[in-house]
Image (cartoon, rainbow, N blue to C red):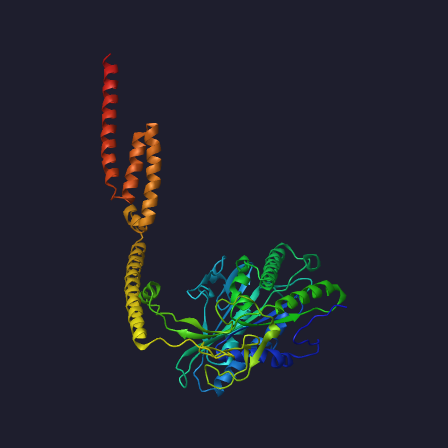
Length: 512
């Protein structure tokens, strides 16, 4: 007999409400503690993943129930919550915004980027601010129609892409600390793995199936690498694992709902699915509470403000549940307990916080990021003398001011250069000199060296006119090279003498 250990197990007659209240509801509540939470639905094609995540009109799934819970919390709480959603799919390794028409993102889809805090995001993805569940439902139903589905032998409405719904909840703690907090909820419907021998897919479905199976294979590799402590985690081998990097091995709380198909024909698929879920259960993330910190204006911010797009706010992680920065060892999920006494960053009361206390290290995590570690001996380093502390503070302040001025100067230079480039690019008729001005000094010097190399080769072969043209091109990119200018003058005189000799020789032959 083969046995698997999971937190919960439900039969086919159990409804959506039972599963949601028992397992998903506590995880959604952590969003109001500034945490990020992720719910996966994983399984073979036709196992019921989309039904679990979306549900039906009579029996709603996880997504509608989670949004209802969020707005119910918003109504009864004193804080002014800002709720935004984004919805996108990963179809054949390309990201598409489901809140927009299919053709709006092009055939290559939206690019994936990494911000200054090393957080992964989808560039150009639309975010909808929603005020009520009815507002969300109208947007969501329309977006679901944009998702790619097709009919196969095993499923009449098979999802041909991975769909990810992200809900961002942001609020300011006006009552307590005055800080702004941001929690995120990722609800993911993974496309099912397919055996093309049983689905009898055609050419188009085969291409989709290949992309789906490839991304799920990389997902398995990532989980395996996380469990074995590998030096390289292959997040970048797939768009899906790249986007879900924080959820798989970062600072997000995670839950995987495994859907299995009954019947002897799916025995091997069920066994493989349960094996993968068992490995995923061993992965332990390092949950954090996210505070939105207003950072200094960078060159990109100034340029964005100049274009009339406003200034974006970026969230910074301020609380960790991983202990010291050098602690690289992973802990099993069984070692993580729920703290019932930690206060929430929003209300100052009690929240059901997943992974707020870790057994073994006895390190308590406060929402603001302070760490309190119990100690048996109670030894502490004595504080420095007041005079020494004042001197150190002055030195640090002076050094910081110096670095700040240098950074400001560099940012202004970058902004002026970018604005000049944009102004030149707006002119449809650009001459060669205008194009050269768009290059950086390093690029100009490198290009000039390339022209010089070819010019010397032509001069050695005796092709002086072509060599002169190459030297002149090199001089355009590096006009400060005085020796090059002098060599061009000498080469022009040499060409004139050569032409005069050839002309005299031709006249002499004619006279003879």
